[in-house]
Length: 300
Image (cartoon, rainbow, N blue to C red; front, top):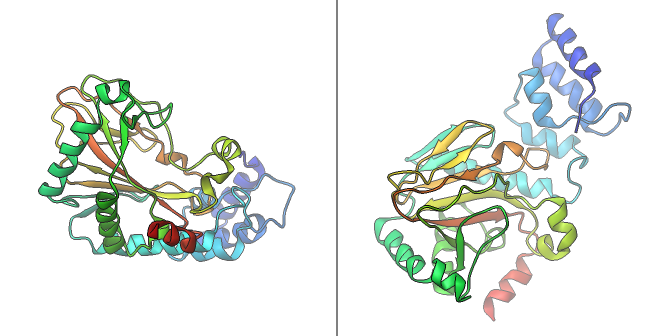
């Protein structure tokens, strides 16, 4: 969404006049993000933060109070804000968590899975998630047109084990966790296409049920199950960060802007692995709209 040049010039003028950044920020939020003004294209909170250079500690409260859904009317900002606060609180308490980038709250946590669990999952993946299984259609599939990996659903007992770890570490409910998938990037494979994890408009239009029960994807998590000595990095080109796979470590990032729109800075690429196959577990968090239906589903 393009923002009028007049707004940028207005910000520059106010800054030259010595007006406090906080005051400029609040005036912009009230005027534009509330939807009261229709003369200009509506700027997002992230745009206002970037232009004014002011990031309030309680930025989420501005969204809840003023944002009227210009980027995504279907996202429950109260739930996503609450979820993000819980996750960030727990990340800050993690002894081995390191903040890599605050545009998408990209963190790395070493030793998130222990060696025994990584070996167990790698053994499962090497047996069930490979080219032969894919060719023989043994529940091994390519996730979408963007990735080059092979993916496989996990047995219920393993899914429950992994989800319990997430619930405990990040104070999450069952309704917020999409069923994890295990993936294998085979040695010598191709580079994936750049992609983001939230469901885009074309995904929802083609499959309206994709967000009906659990809502939109909010946070993404990858756990590396083995070391890769050459290649295999996950790359975030818009923030110039590449992460080398390290056994047991987790990479976690926020896929949505504070305003509820897709954070394009979270676009990522899986680079080819040259030395050995790469195994990962993918988690995606959701808004968690319908916990009752999910709980009943789990009892069947």
